[in-house]
Picture 1 (cartoon, rainbow, N blue to C red):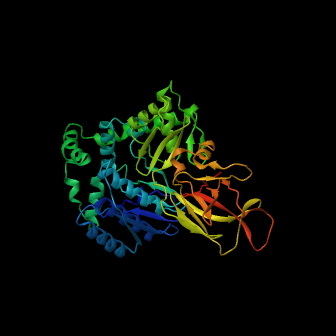
Picture 2: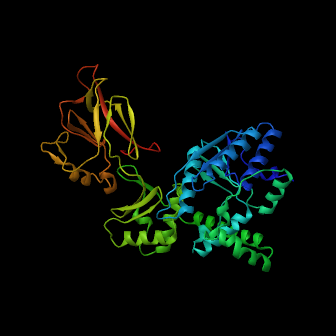
Picture 3: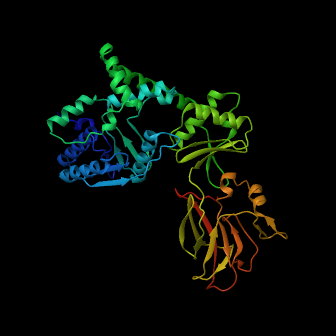
Amino acid sequence: MNLTQHLNADPAAPRWLVALSGGMDSIVLLHSLASLVSQSSGLPPVSAIHVNHQLHPEADAWQAHCDRVCASLGVPLQHSVVSVDGAGEGIEAAARRARYAVFEDSLGDGDVLFMAHHQDDQVETLLLRLLRGAGLSGLGGMPERRPLGAGQLYRPFLGLPRSVLANYAAEQKLDWVDDPSNADSQFDRNYLRAQVIPAVAQRWPGYRQTISRAAANLADAQALLTQLAPSPLTLRSRTGDPGLAARDLPADDPVRAVHNLRAWLQDQGVMAPEHRMLTEFLRQLHTGSAAPEAISGTWGLRGYRGDVFLVSGSSPSERAVTLAPGEQVAFGNGHLSLEPVTGDGYRLAPEQRVEVHVRTGGERCQLAGREHRTVLKKYLQQEAIPPWHRDAVPLVYLGGVLIDIGGFALCEHPARGCDEGDAAVGLWRLRWRAVEGADFVE
């Protein structure tokens, strides 16, 4: 049996990577892909990624098995150990989120990540989403291809039943591991697989093809709807968070509001949460709630002055750091650096260091060009710094005196200068960037 005809990924990609759990499906995918590359010239190198969730006593043994399989095929293996906390979303969802975070971080520009989902997985996914009340986009099922991080996710086996993969594994005498949790019917997917789908198969033998066709039709309908509906425009908060204007979320048209919000999240590379979470968030937004929010894993939606912003779910930094001219350090949801400037800055010698930490309350300073001291909290409000960033704004101190507010504004200080003075003492200013590289201060 030859599966290589189904492996139609971009041959010009820098790398092909396989998401390798150690189970039969992913072992078949790795073996068939490695065989294709070994028999052809000009194809990208193959490597594998294994995520150890530490959820089973045999997790380390499964990782070791993946090591052995990859070694036998001459395929490099990257493994990542993650911690999974199911509080608030369940173990399955938390494990999936942790796994995909590893995949996303591992992909470089143009890389392709192969995943071994097959037609039976697609059917189970569609039935689960239907039973959970998914909307049009959810009922389209898993796409064969979609962007993931800097690369692409590709599921070449979505049109094949699991039996085809099982036959290949038997013919090639492949060795894999079985996760006993896959037989535990307390998990919804396993219950469907063991109790519901066999009854469906007995009554409707062609259910895989018909359900997959329904999913494809719904995906086409969603794609057409997205093309016909005007694309909402992304705005930016004062601190660089991507946002959506209130005009794109009309209170008198909740269907359009939900569609626009979901489409915009997809444009941001974020998987939209359940419909009920979006509708509740929009209800809070439209009824004037003081702080509308919807938190999902590592990101959250927050409302501010009628608009909506996508923010990191990470906590602000609580530690103080020191910086010298030209240095860069991690800080909260991003990183800080002191960079040379022309114009307004503060004079620092090469070996001189400043201290940076977040506000604790009660801070005041005399802003550059003003006569009187200003309460920092009031200044942040006036400058439209969103509430969720006010406790995360890095404050720069020199000799115990506040001299810079997050790169937004300088305070009066003897070190402040404007391109004059000793040429050996340069002018510097704080730069605050998000983790993905966008400036917080624009």
